[in-house]
Length: 195
Image 1: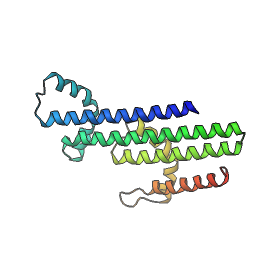
Image 2 (image 1 turned 120 degrees about the vertical axis):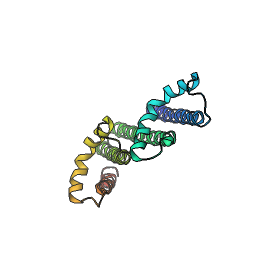
Image 3 (image 1 turned 45 degrees about the vertical axis):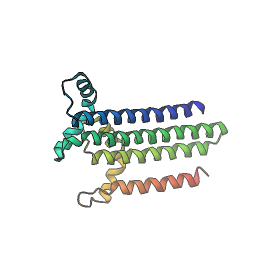
Image 4 (image 1 turned 60 degrees about the horizontal axis):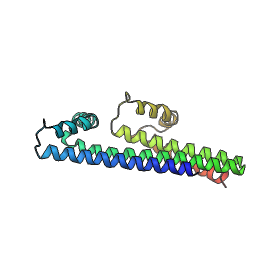
């Protein structure tokens, strides 16, 4: 169990460090941008070299939406925080399920082991649907590997629900129905297999 706790802490600290580094780089880029630092100086070139791979796709998306691309560093900060939260939630869910399964296996409780596996899978599935929703709001295209994975994984549940509950104008209500269904299944697993 200490190994799983260490892995969880490593992921959490790694995510926090990545977020802080991204925030500092974006703030530094905004300072350089608004203080008219020589764009050809060594620090400016190095900063652009490091941050352009992150900022350029966000700038393109903002331009497509008709929004000023100068807001890209702020949006990158928000995206970094949101992605960090997704990673922490996903790792906590997976590692929590692993710990529960190991504890059930040690006790020889096969029913509880099965319950923890099902509960953890439902928890992860709900998080994947949530991530897909956020990515679709961010207009992440289907050419993105992560978005293709999310669509392939979540569409088997969302497609039948979408056929039963047609979209309300531009709003797809199938994820809401999926969350309710997953919540009911988690409550049923908790009430039967994990008692």
